[in-house]
Length: 128
Image (cartoon, rainbow, N blue to C red; front, side, top):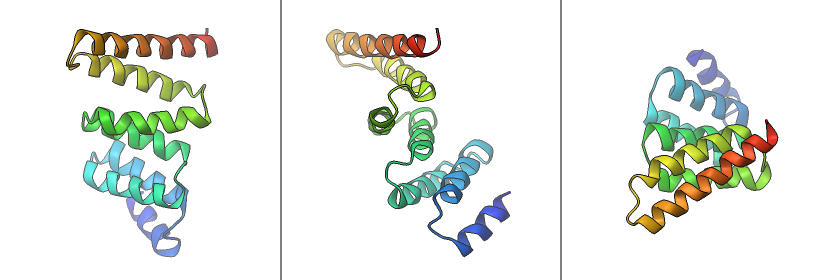
């Protein structure tokens, strides 16, 4: 599969589905986070609001790198376009729950947990 993505990029270096798909292969299959991250960044230069790329890059930053501060804005961008995107709602709620344990204060922790609960409520509203 990797050889096919490389060949496709030679022919069409700015094809969003190839860039995003190759990034996903590098992340999910090869666990090559630096190369996957680079591919997602390239994809977002071509189509800045590409939903699948934003979501998967957000997951890489969130789960792969524990970089909550950089993942959250990517999730926000998806939800600004698709407010009922269940995958992003769930991943974002998980991010907020995970980050709440590192919150600098109880007030900050409470805000994160409240926002996570609100995202979970939105999921249940879409899929009861």
